[in-house]
Image (cartoon, rainbow over all chains, first blue to last red; front, top):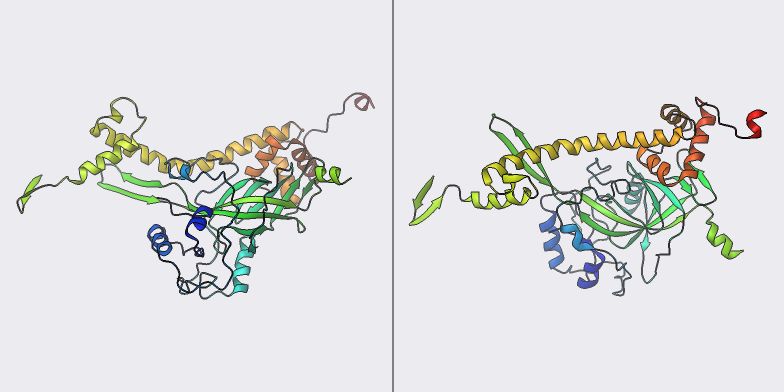
Length: 250
Length: 138
């Protein structure tokens, strides 16, 4: 069963969402199950999100449990097992604290987030960041993967460590912007452009079975692997004139 | 293979039954007896898993060559071939990767033409831009 902390589960259990665990693929399922079953004693210092969380109603979580979803829009959502960047924090000593690893302070966390080309914004509470589709695209880079995104898209990236479900992110490594009238090409990045996204869920990929065999040599190894992913939903693209709004305003 | 212990019959191959179910589950859609008979299914499933291991690595290579094909065909519409196009982009320090470039060549033709023009100014293409009509005569 996929261990996912999605918006629905937040709504149902009304717990402060626990930060992402250190990456130990074997024990993640057990760890999240046990952690979510016991309510956290000391309440977190930040305000609990209100129960009336806005979440997009068309999340189809049931589809994740099927076996073969390897090629789900490979061009847009590249989530294969490329090496994930960055530092592995220590084990989460302070479970009730806001940040997962005890050794990194808030500034260091922000710096590490910069390496992954994202910036944590505040949690969205009581606001509806999802706008109707605009014919504007941006090419954004997260880690070593690039995506061509537009308003309302959802992309799967490698697990982003310092953000939680329903967090707002700003992806600031934008390589190109395009609209119906303009194309802006960055060399290599555009400093004034920003793409806003919301973390939709932290999920595990479908299981792949790693099977190695040497014939006639009595050697056979089987291993299962589930890659950790984050699903982001793009809400806004800034840095380019959007022709429709200009026409409406004019 | 079977042995008695404590009055119960233990099949040495007691895991065999569980394993059979898993093997048949992985053998869905196989041809002929390979989806029904355990001896044949086991071999075929092992081969299938080996192929999937190998092809997960091959998929990355195949996708990259597909992207390069698409970029090539997209740029040749504008009179530049793939090598010169990529060289021009590298000179301009544009770090778009081939996956995104192939998507742009398919879905964003005007933006892709802008990229081709940038590359052409940075590194001259192998065919001058076709002039149509009166401009061709002049």
